[in-house]
Length: 321
Image (tube, rainbow, N blue to C red; front, side, top):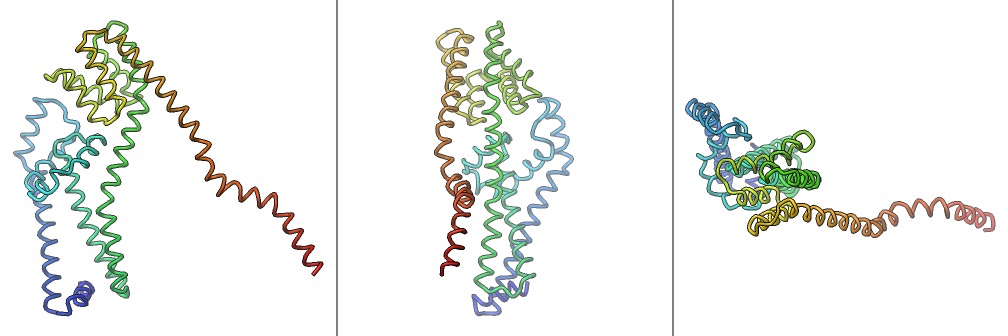
């Protein structure tokens, strides 16, 4: 605290003003932390909310979000800063959906975690400055900016990684699901029954895609139209391949064409597309290998091939001169 006071005094050149600034920052941090903890604890350990959650789970079914997350969501609804400041963060909401966090209040929980991590990074800055009091003012500013910047950017980096990882898993396993869907439709099952059968078959091998297909079937059963369920399916995954499948199925249902033949044609076109993508990657491989060859392989080759000759020439020159 004394070190922070000295830093602020070096800027303000007024001991009383610097002391008031330190007290104000400490009070703001303490009030924010106390409000966050009180709201979260009151929501987690509220008997009324526990009973309401029990009634809702009995009437609707199992919730995939988890009890603790639901309690956090109810608690975060009471925090006006989190509710109003980040409601327009569409990019974060899209990444949360692609990462598999489908709860309505997932964005509020994410922003609450960002705020908590930011407070932790500020506390870490205080500890670091306390442990190294000999740092200059400019270097202290750099350290604070680095730690706070990492604390602010780290949640977004982790969320982007989780979303990309889940989308890659869905993209990798989508061809298997498409082939199974074609087989089920050609064997005489309806489209919804085919989705359910494919979901059951992929439950062990591809659990993420199986969950998404099962969610489509569940939404249709509770009253969604198939078009709406498929549209939400494509929005949750964020894959162009699944958007293409959605468009093909909706067009087939509107025009009245056979869904089995339509899916067969789409599967063949999708297989050709994957072959073209593989050929494109193979064609780019030669260009991508140029830089590793220049900076890694060729220097070692020249050292082995030309090095002995250079050493021999140098020894001859030493003898001659």
